[in-house]
Image 1 (tube, rainbow, N blue to C red):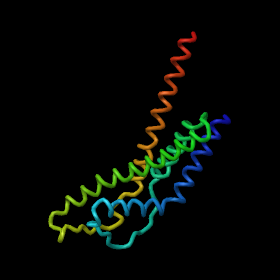
Image 2 (tube, rainbow, N blue to C red; image 1 turned 90 degrees about the horizontal axis):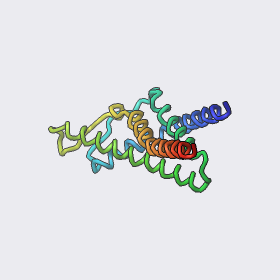
Image 3 (cartoon, rainbow, N blue to C red; image 1 turned 120 degrees about the vertical axis):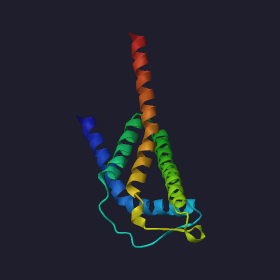
Image 4 (cartoon, one colour; image 1 turned 90 degrees about the vertical axis):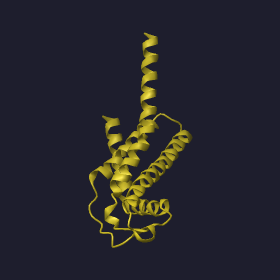
Amino acid sequence: MKKFIHFLVVFGIGMLITILLYPHARSLVLQFYRWTTSYDLIFRGKYIISFEPVMYFSGFGIYFLVTALDTMYMELKESITRIFLGCLAIIFFTLFICLIDVNVKVRQCITCPDTVRYIQPQRINHALILSVAALLASSTHVIRLVHRWISIRRSQEVNL
């Protein structure tokens, strides 16, 4: 019961951090869109902030939960290293997803003047991009957890 409450608190902290960092993450996604097209993508119109899907917040909550599970029995230095590498993985996967999506959007516009594509910021699903990036980054921790669980099971079978 104590571990369940601990992981529930970690999940809540992950969601809180996600809520606080959402404006910065949204601007990072827009910047990745501009950067991957060599600034051939121009955003027109105002961005209307609306309620983002729960999937975005829960995706990062799951990431924090899996990271806490993975780093629970590690030393502090190794835990900080894994958390840092996980953050880099989120940034890498966000960049990768933006690169794929923006190339699809730019290729759709054949008749655009000077190959510049104008798009409204609402047409980009920030929440989906960021939550998929967080879930892909948590897959590295899940693989490590499964590997650890299998090695523990094998060592228990050998001891019997």
